[in-house]
Length: 261
Image 1 (cartoon, rainbow, N blue to C red):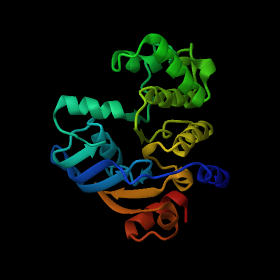
Image 2 (image 1 turned 180 degrees about the horizontal axis):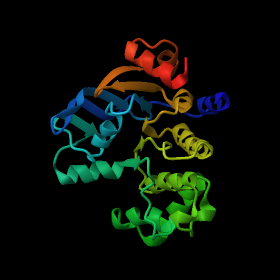
Image 3 (image 1 turned 90 degrees about the vertical axis):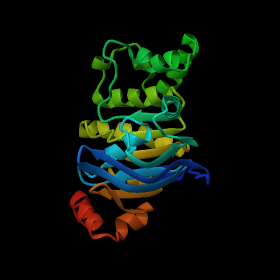
């Protein structure tokens, strides 16, 4: 992973002082279960943030609230200058700027890879079919599987399907990408190919929030690592300080379990 880290550090990793996401005192309940508690988070354009923590700590719920896949009950979320409210126009605007890649690839099995990638641009952005196909091929090349364009998802490996899911998100030309444990459903040998794709995206300056247990990836590309526990942000720091000198006891325990020291 040292080679990956080196590779990532050599890329243009500029962070702007422009705010991409602003979350203030955000709270979320599932019934009586208080799943997110007073979340404050500012994400700057070009930042690459890795969110980690034990299962059930609220990591996935946090990023799902950013594009209204989950509704927050208190506090405010602003994405790209648009306030996330119950106003459907605002939700649509935010979703058109924010790409999301899930743990499971969520590809349509009855559509080819190319059709999966062109569906949203044609229907949502009203992009002409030919232009949508050119864009899709551009991003399939970027994730190194242009030769799979006419196959169906079931004919691809898990790693290839996840790279298609990334390409599909990029076809909407989002300004922010959210990743929800994108490698956790993959076999170990397929994880690297997906992480390499994400590292390339990071090098190009994409604003990224990634929920993952891949700590090597965090060390390679994150400029901030956030640790969550019991619905709260317990600690956040740049990777070197986060891994070498964690301040909170819960962070230390988590890292000792996940890194084995």
